[in-house]
View 1 (cartoon, rainbow, N blue to C red):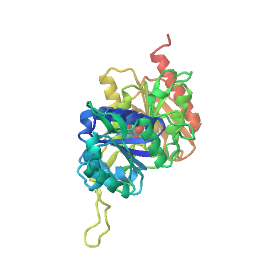
View 2 (view 1 turned 180 degrees about the horizontal axis):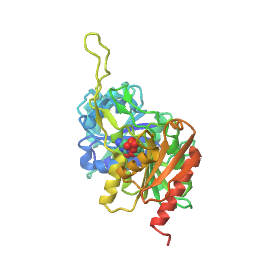
View 3 (view 1 turned 135 degrees about the vertical axis):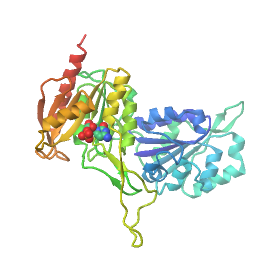
View 4 (view 1 turned 90 degrees about the vertical axis):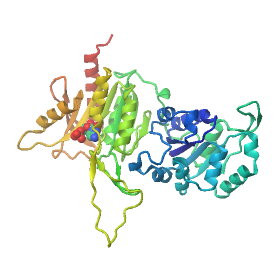
Length: 426
Ligand code: C5P
């Protein structure tokens, strides 16, 4: 479930880090929106690290993704904790002066739960009580604060309910079981342990699917990637004993169980997630189809057909090459990390597929390049694949074909072989 977690500017913000953990460990995809004041208590880096998503409190950040519209539209559940007196007042009067209040206004039909925390006098003040009543009359669930010791020497009603209580109330409100009935998708590395196998003890990050680059709130530029090959690679790495993190752009297939899923939409989001994940990854496999270009301008409102103005012309700007950047970052940090790229190539009169692929391998400077011969096989959406694995170290090109799981197993075997060549087992 896509959850927006709004964090108000109160000392109880620190407890909300545990609430976020409960949501992500239950497999939910959480975007955190702290208020400006909340970031004085808990910094953006904490929210980004725990959620795996970029975090902002300004409507002017990531304008190209139309964040202030998108987050509210896409949310299946919004939880605000701690809901301060100020935040309750702003929500009750429909203000839109930061990203969180905008998101609350844009939340169409999704359930909203607010968990207040403040000093007893503030909570009991008629203004706050009137705001709570207004919000409840609009269908928003406002929890009663717990009673007990408050920040200073005072005690009484005004404490933030415990994270577990908010978690259960929120999931019950959204109609989701507190513990997913199917195999959970652990979102925290802490709950993933490696099994025995050639990649035991290693962390592998795999990107999969196709990015979507927004044009306006309803349209995007996408591609035909199904995510099947990336998902097969994530499953194969898991089966080889690795802790696996899947950076999932748009996919037609569900992620495998037992891997840590980070959902991304655009190339820029994928870049941020990949650079973040790279910090503790032993292997990175960039199987995602990343849009090379994105619309230069993203309209905040739906682009209309109009007879009185010319039809729109879309100009594009280039997206960063994430694979190249990962290699550069690794080399700058002298980190030991194996980076694998994918390429779809065609031959022509000037060279065959392998010539072009070898040139790409030199350009991208990754360790292995898995090459699909486009035109010979239909790759997108198919259940089978046929590839050649090229190595920068110069070993012989290796062919692999069969189901996408067979190809994934061959790529993972090759990765294990490269790793044992670079770092001989003790
Ligand atoms: O340049 P080309 O798109 O053919 O390269 C494909 C490889 O580069 C894939 O591994 C893909 O995930 C990665 N890529 C990237 N960032 C881009 C475009 C492609 O990381 N902007």
